[in-house]
Every structure is written in C-alpha cells, then in structure tokens.
Image (cartoon, rainbow, N blue to C red; front, side):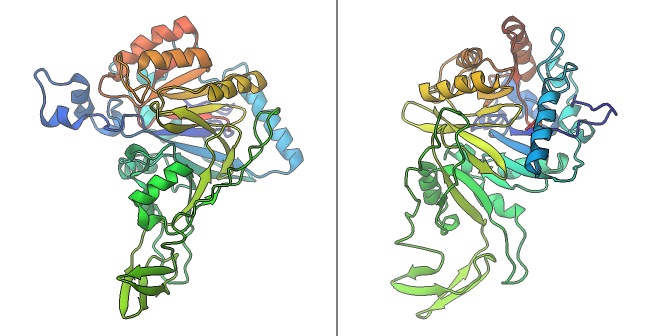
Length: 444
C-alpha cells in the first residue's frame, strides 16, 4: 500500500520508483521453454504465459527503472524548511515512509505473500503516490536503461502509470538489454510539422566506452558529438570533486558530422533543419533523404563515485561495478532523505565502490532501498550475482530493504519470496523479488 497522509490520500511528498523490467537479458518466459516445451514443462515459464503480463509477476522484461521525481524549485530558505520536513517524514514513528517497517512479515509487499496474491498494486493507480503538484513542483521522469523490451515496457506501463514522457535516460552499460531500445525513443518524441519546429532532444547519460559502442550500433543516432556531463560536488564531505578525465567524445568529428556527408567521394551539404529529421541534402549531383530518428543529447559521465551528475534535476552518483572480470558497468545512487542504490548488472562490487557506500552510510545513514542483480538461484555465473552472492552483498551493505532484479526462469516469484521471507526475518532486512510494474513510494 502507498503511504497515506492524514486525510487518507496518498502522501503528496513522495516520488516513486516504477519497475519497468526485472528479468534477465533473455527475459521470462524463455522462448525455448514455450516453443519447444519439455515434459514436464518449465513451471515458471508456463506460469509466465498463463496470465496477462500486467498481472503476472513471473513475466519479466529486461531490467529498467523509471524514477518519477517530484522536482522542487524553492528559495534557499524554503529549501531548508522542506528538506527538514522531508527528513521528519522519513523518521515519522507511524512508519509512513519506512517501506521495511513491519510486524512479523507484513512489511513484505502484499503482492508477494501467497500463490493467490492479488497484483492490484501493480496496476491500480489509486494506490500510487498523489500526482497533484504543489507550487514550485514539477514531475520529472528519469529512466535507467532502454533495452530490447523498451517499446513493450512503454506501451504496457507508461499508460497504466501515467508516465507521459522521459526527461532523461541513464545507461548502466552498452549490452543489448540496456541500449537496444534507443531507436524507439523517437516514438515518444513529436513529429515536427514544419522545418522551423524544434524537437527537444532527450538527454542520455552514459560512460565513454558505452558511447563508443553505441556509435557502432547506432551511427545514425550519434552524428551530434557527445559532451561531458557537468560534474557536481562529491557527496562525501572529505572528497574533492573529481576532475574530468579530459576525454571528449569526438570520434566522429573528423569523419562524419551532421552537416557534411561524403557519398562515393562527393560531398553534400545538409540544408535540412536537424530537429525535423525530414528533408533532403543536395550537392555534386547527389540527393540524400534525411530520415526521422531519435533526437538525443549525448552526455558522457565518469565511471567514478566522486563524479555525481544531474539528470533532470536529480543528483545521481555513478557506482562502478564489475560485470565480469574484464568489464565495468555502472550502478547508481540517488535520493535524499531516502538513499536509493540501483545495481542491475554485477558480478563483484569493487573495493572503492564498497568503501564509498559504507562511508555514505556513516555520513547520512543506511541505504533505504537497494535494487540488486540476482541472475541464477543456486549456481554461479561469470558476469552476474547468483542468489547466495546477492544475499551476501545485501548482508554487507545492510540496506533497510532490498529488491532483486535480473532473474531468469529459475525464480518462481511466490515460492522464492516465501524463502526470502525467512531470510529477511533472520537478518532483519526485508528482501524480496521485484516484479514488472511494481511501484515503490520514496522521498527524494
């Protein structure tokens, strides 16, 4: 249930986390399990196709999170007052904002308590946060990752959850389950009716090596050179702001840019308004038609806990983690007074990232909500945590609550949550599987 104010309405202070996808790169059901079923059939994949996806916790798309952020514009004095009130709300003895407070096991999401649990909390907007805005507030929509399931996730959850747009997109890494939806971003951008019309580009934040891979996969989306995302001061008081590496993403600059295109040795000059994506280019007897593509403002972020950045007004800190011994992906920390940590693809948390998270715990308190990877149930994997490793990481990080994502068809939602309930009681940390469509009210 969403937190309630004194008048019984959903609390008007809250932002919201909306899980757009919680499965592995393959997703659940696994195609092979439904096209060539075994005897007996895969139990989880069978359940995943038995009910509609919007009411089925075993149906899982690629990992992705939408942050519905209640952005505030206040004077300095108003800001101090509001943040003090938010902190008081967070610590209120009635447990309004403490998602993990419980008597016995009732801190567990209602949708995870039994085989016959009703998933109305996944689809009923009356149980969401109060979408009304106070003066000085606006909703900003910040999404983490847009993978192979992006279009499906938009059509399923944006309408049900009153998500009108995306204001910023943050990428964890450059694998297919995180970036292959970039082409479909244009489906959320209006078609200009006149060459003078301006289509605001979507700000996409990504690491330098991720940008290089995106350029190879989507050359037509990367004609505009990327720029470094402006750095914010480090969130650790003893740490100075990180100096930018000086790497500016200009790989395309000496070969191809938005203004000049070489075709068979003939240079053509683009006279089309870049915002429209329509028109022609002419020169040297060659005509080139410009196609409509996603409009994106590429911003390079540092792979460093000392280099936070602002995405649509929300301060976000990169958390470098190993995604295999030879690869660095990014998790992210954001939010105050609730600290949210999102790590969707991880095989090991490096010492520097672990030290940062522990230092932050000493400075501002425990992680309020941890979202963390768990690919397999009981056998290790080279590039992802399996459940025992996930639980070890949760035990070390000591969040107030943790939700698991990235699960394969080895995880039966209700059965595994029943097992996790026992672990949660023993460790005094509420841990359970997330599911697509799950909404969590938070104070950011």
